[in-house]
Amino acid sequence: MKSQQPDNQVNVLIAIVLSMAVLLGWSYFFATPQMEAEKARQARDAATKSAPSTIPTAAAPSATSGAQAPAAAIAATKPATREQAIAASPRIAIETPSLRGSIALKGAAFDDLSLVNYHETVDPKSPNIVLFSPLSEVGGYFARLGWASSGKPVKVPDSETLWTAKTPGPLKPDSPVTLEWANGEGLIFRRIVSVDENFMFSINDEVENTSTSDVALKPFARLFRFGAPKTPSVWIQHEGLLGVPGDAGLQEITFHNATTEPPARFDGKTGGWLGITDKYWASAIIPDQKVAYNANLEGEAPKDAKQLPMFLAEFESVPMVVPAGSVASVKTNLYAGAKKASLIEKYGEDLGIEKFDLMIDWGWFYFLTKPMNHALTWLYGILGNFGFAILALTVIVKLLFYPLANKSYVSMAKMKKLQPQMEALRERFKDDKSRMQQELMQLYQKEKINPAAGCLPILVQIPVFFALYKVLYTSIDMRHAPFIGWIQDLSAPDPTSIFNLFGLLPFGVPAFLLVGVWPIIMGITMWIQMQLNPPQPDPIQQQIFSWMPLMFTFLLATFPAGLVIYWAWNNTLSIIQQWYITKQQGAEIHLGANVRRTFGPVLRLFGMGSESKG
Image (cartoon, rainbow, N blue to C red; front, side, top):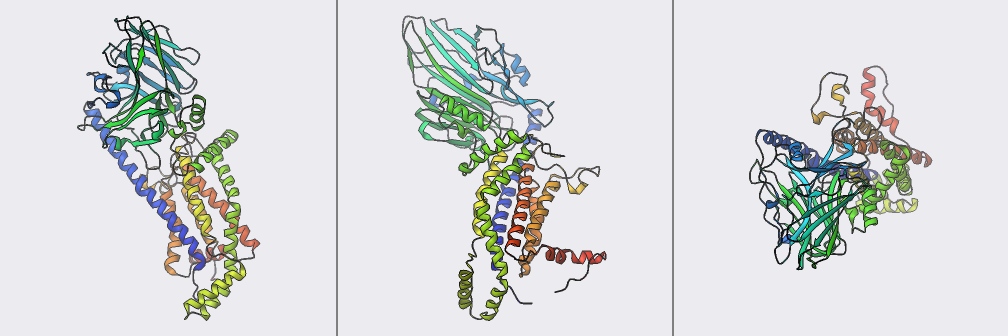
């Protein structure tokens, strides 16, 4: 048999190398660190339960010069549990279609919020997601707003101040509440809080000066978080401190970097916002977009294993002079809830919040990610099933790239038809490589074939794959979204495993052996797609191609089921497309021959096949 130069396999090899780089990078940067981080978290949780934690002392940031320091705002004695901490202060309840919780009258802190429509597990009876919590031995996550003296010291409300509820509550979208406190020196502080049906609070702070002299005050807002998220962070999405402090642009500081790097300070900014984000949940403090402020993003590492790290996002506006006998006010917005893209974008537009949509980490390919997210959300609204929306979006993407892919497959089919002529040229000029390349190029030009045409679709689909993966990973709509059958959470890996016959055998398997039905389907479709091409003449290449689907099956088993379903469906559409175009061009489809070559020995062993000829 004549040796074949594998020119027509270069594109496929490039695809394999790039894909393996992506998947190995995923395994190295995400899967393994995720399992290690989870083990470390469990160890920390065990240590936390066995010993009470303490909160690190934080120095007052320069951005809030004159205001009470964070350390001073924290009670020396911490309740043991969240429930005890909530019970330590009288409260006004919060009741909306999206939020449940309360505002502490002690300190007027927003420190008790749960998300009504989101649960910890796929079981709708499981506890709701808790976002804000008052400070306790298990941590704390809350927002505080207030006033700091500027110039002559005056008595201002602090974390120990007990406010009076002028309206009984509860706080509802159509029922604002008013809090009030007088400092006994002629200043009356009044806070009017309203909330919409989703996750946005509007806080209007007023100061009435009944004294005989002018007073200068600086309004501020702070987000405190003690303790990092329980779930490990991943490289594909930012988790930690973030914000857009005016013209400084988007700032992202991971939880880890916040405790190891100096604070990020921004002076004299106007517009924007500051916040703290997890994968699916976020909080943000939003100043008046026309008033100048100083901002600060920082973290503090624990001093020992019993302590919790502290994270702080804050701003302090320029001083306001409240003349005697007058009232001054400042409006601040507080966002606390789920990172739902359409909702966040609407807030940015309606309230004029600068770059508020960047609360969601769209990544480098945001010009692809955002449209894909909107398309997926639209399809989800029509189809009512996020899995079917993924399948429909895959078809749309395939149609958009059809001309490009069609050109690639036509070029590959023509290359197959020219294989005998190419082999003849290689044999004829086997001792003159330069002449052989010239003759091959002339043949390509004559037949109007571009040997590199197959590379372009591969290169184009890499950013598309990353963008779609980011959408599927970050979309809160996919969280706990069922598909069909056993897939009850598209954001989690396929829970079945071939190693216990998909649950038929009565034992569990380790996480690294959870190779479920959908990863296997994906591996099969990948193998079929590869078998549409002729076998590689080089034995090493042939071995690589033979083992590639199996390797991808194990690697993708750790991916969210939604992405694996996308990949398997995309492979299926590619098989149909390549088969059709190959038949149209009159080129040979090698699937049958490759199946007989691969499984012939097994079939003959059971008397189900015969020796193939030729």
